[in-house]
Image 1 (cartoon, one colour):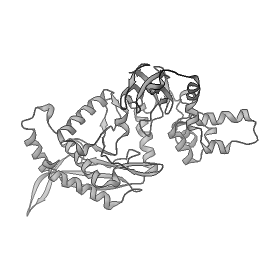
Image 2 (cartoon, rainbow, N blue to C red):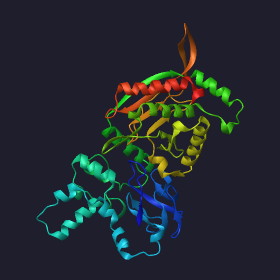
Image 3 (cartoon, rainbow, N blue to C red):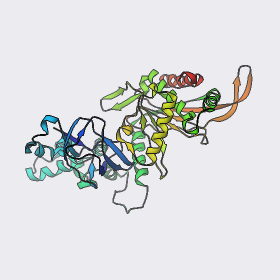
Length: 398
């Protein structure tokens, strides 16, 4: 018997509100099936289950706000569905507290002279802290016992810890003041990224005239809905380069850097209501350019209608952020943790360019790689950008 819990859909997620159940007790689910829709600061996200079995009980109600890790449903093997003894039920009720109970700072610093009953409250409060809040408290040396939670059921969220540090205002400010929920989520994630990740930046301007001319030929006989844009070529080129430079393709976790065996490229999408999300396409290096373009169109449409899947927000191993055809010439981006690299693509520009023995007006594009210095250096970052340049010089091979 397994318990399906509220998943973490990003480093900045503290809790989610259940909007819709897509399964009922008695339904059989397979790994990867979408079972619910959860509302977060990034909008409505479809969440998948990662074990197969039969749904025996729904533990969360529609409209309920649950911290990351809270039980949502119980799923059992087919043989187990015939009987549901009470012991498992009793074990799963306190699961959120038991899961995060080993918080040494809260346990170790509790005054030993106090009687047992008063000592039981602080650990409960600390156990209700979100992963981001616990991490921030540990880094700042703050005892969670002293922090008053403002989250669901008194849970401690990141803003509570930051308020204790004097870095943020309490979350109880009047509605409508300050940043939107989406902007707050982006601000929290990016602030944490800049605090924790030692960024360094390498830029390279490449000629994109040949690939633009090749695309014009390829798109001449395609209907508008099937035309391939330069952005798709850049995403595929980034995936190919990521496979060549493994130090930029993966996640940095508490145990160190974990390189990825697949190139799952996140793409920054600007939402109409404001804010950004960066869902990822899986195995981009193995996709055709037509499939990459179709995947990007689908992902942008679903992102702006609030129908992204949870796995799309967490599986990215490298992110590409493009300023579009009419944007600025270049920018330096901030890495999306736990990733270790972000490629910022400037808008194509017409510039004087040396071709052979002469100088001609040619289309060029500036690429800026933001990289994590804990896992790679300038030489590896340079290899990555040159690998992209080589891909763009031979688009017919992508």
